[in-house]
Length: 357
Ligand code: GTR
Image (cartoon, rainbow, N blue to C red; front, side):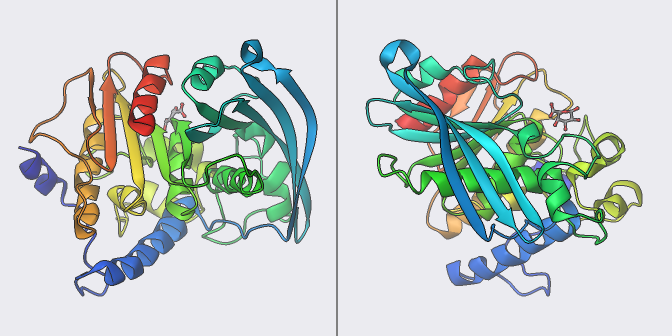
């Protein structure tokens, strides 16, 4: 059933180069991956900005008795020096006093910790550290490119077809948080996961695809231009997302969103770029705008690349999963829960089960 469904979607082949040559082995795939990441940037997200010329970390405050004395809550200001100026944004570090098993970089909608999408004490109790930042502190979630990182990158506005959209900028900021974590000797550098919900789930996937220092990316209800396959998608489609959020993407995206041009890839390429690292995709049953079926099919399709590595990818049955269920046996984890579009505590519990066991 899934095979037939995937056939109808008519996805571009992951294991065929743009020039028609076949990917035969891992060395070939590494080149194909570069090709896909190049296209994902030039057609959709825009070019990831260069790493800063200089970066500084300054601890502004530290609460050592956070969560009944089980953790530190530190606010650290990250200053990034670029060609045309510098930008500073805060990261909030929830660090359990016991060594953390898994560390999350959470790209969030708000600053405060805890937050409705960040159950800090529960994460501490489950041996997790969380480094969270608010995307608005990097640059605003609107079409204003004259603030924060956007202004420094594009002092004269965006002029090139592949200039970074806001998603690429928030992803870049998550990588700067990773730069900071690299300086902390008490964090296990092999177990760092970037995570986000919805637009920030799209951002988490792009971050994980582009930066191999992340052991994994987790996308919660990321939908259109996130985990979901675009071809045959229902709910939000390219014109919908473009009409409201064109600034998330590069200027070139307009041709695909409004002018009927076909992408050379589909979103399973974004997922496959994480292989052989882990990946976790989550859907909500009633989130028809995101389209759970297309999110799931994307995981199935991306598994092909994991198989090239002798791995499994998503371990699944030949049918759509019915909520609530978690498929956690492979390098791609997937869960679908009951309810609406939201980053719920239920989602976190599934992520904890997937990453900590
Ligand atoms: C919606 C948007 C989705 C999703 C969501 C969110 O309005 O159409 O693609 O990203 O916002 O971020 O909450």
